[in-house]
Image (spheres, rainbow, N blue to C red):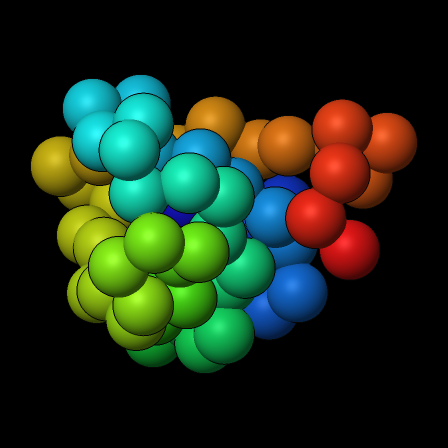
Length: 61
């Protein structure tokens, strides 16, 4: 797993843009708990989805 995917990192799901931005809440192996703006908490498997990291300057702090 990418070392940048740590709690607090802001991400976007490339296949679900309508979910909005999300903040990683927890990391457990290849699973991430991410709280997205529009759909709430989702569990993401990093072996199936490569999340896009959003720079803080793009909003959502």
